[in-house]
Length: 232
Image 1 (cartoon, helix red, strand yellow):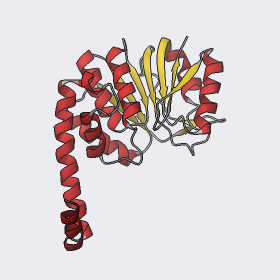
Image 2 (image 1 turned 45 degrees about the vertical axis):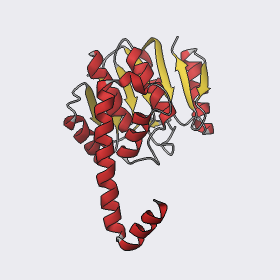
Image 3 (image 1 turned 60 degrees about the vertical axis):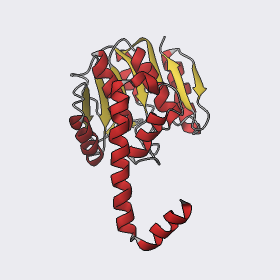
């Protein structure tokens, strides 16, 4: 097999190989998404083949959440009792949107990059995931930090789960803006899942959130740690 792949690489131009790879990703993604929509609960543990196929098929491995974090997000989404807030959008938006639709909840996703939002919305439309409200606006400067320009007048007052994988780390204040802006809309018992706990900045942000919310947090995950905090 390895010898055959080496021959293919020599014979086919890079552009053709890239096109064939994309066709394969699309095929794998559609198959995996079909399995996921049928039974999301099968994807609540890391290492699940469907989950790994979804990550591969989505084709954004450098930035997408790894299976540990995604599995945790799916598990909590399956058990949450109200609307979900997601900071940033991507593969997780589709998966959690499918769970939200199945459970009759709203899933709010905040995004600041129009081109990326177009891609995510296209997939949401393709899979008829009307449970997701994708809000796309440039990041807003709040003084000490920049964060999403959330349409607060339209958003629920009782988020029960927060998936935080944005904005980008180089944003002023990083991801700190979640709590100052949304604190009054996070119910008691709301679970916050913050990705990228391997970065010192994220741990510092979680520490600040803990003081503002009077809550503790713990770091979970092995290959790519993430933070879990429960609002008191």
